[in-house]
Amino acid sequence: MSRTEKNTKKPEEPKEGNTSPKDGRTGDYLRTLREKRGLSIEEVCQSTRISTTNLRAIEEQNFAALPADTFTRGLLNIYAKFLEVDPADIVARFMQERDASQLQGKRFRGKSPRSLPSPKTLAEPAHVSLMFMAGLVLLIIIMLFTGFCLYTSWNPFGFLVKESYDIHAILSDTFPDTKPSPPTSGSDDLAAVSPVPDQSGIAIPAAGRIEEKPEESGHTLTLRFLTDAEVTVARDEAEPFSHAFVKGQEETWSAETSITVTFDKPDSAAVFVNNTPVDFPPGEDGSYTLRIPEDLPEYPAHE
Image (cartoon, rainbow, N blue to C red; front, side, top):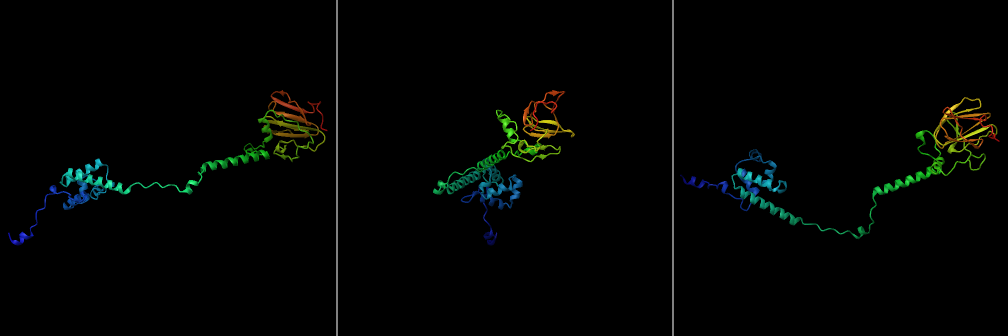
């Protein structure tokens, strides 16, 4: 052997099984062994069934990306056996470095001191809940709306039944001790309200008040309905017509010679003839008919 060959001869490298991480990191040591074998991460993954993510986390010692300690020990054991190094030594060194890293992180992280509230914050009043404020505003609106309806005698739900209810009659039903008083002609407390005719030609006075008729002769019939009922009315020689009324509604008709009214229910209305209360007519064959003046000769005529 020549001198040149003696000088160029490389010393024998120790076997991988006898090498150790020494002062370096265990992950770097494992990467060095893999690169010496000329293997890529993907090739190791195919041979060991360890995912490329975990292999990179082991070599980079990215402890946060690794699974729990039990699974990490198993991965290190498989990887060390594949690289033909001592698995127990690799696992012990890697886990020791992991524990030291976690302990160092806790020391630097520490606990942030609790900040004391400023005097301005201590002086601020407690905030009121937004839902509580919304409910309070809604309650005030409902109370104001109810007061307006009672003051103006307006029923906001009258359009549902296409009839105008009398708020005073509803209050009278709520307090039964209040008895309806017969209408008095010419009293100052009855306001003159223009009647609104409906499709049947009946003049319905507003707010349930009895309309004062301009006629000074003949007969006047006023009905104050105690229940929902339907009546048929015939005046003088005109054709009879039928109309349905609701509880609390009042209606007045006038005629020169005669009025005939038929009810479909018993005791469905308080009857006033010429502003004088009369008894409800008796029933005949399921109907209740009142004829003025034939059936009531004793009632006074309209003055």
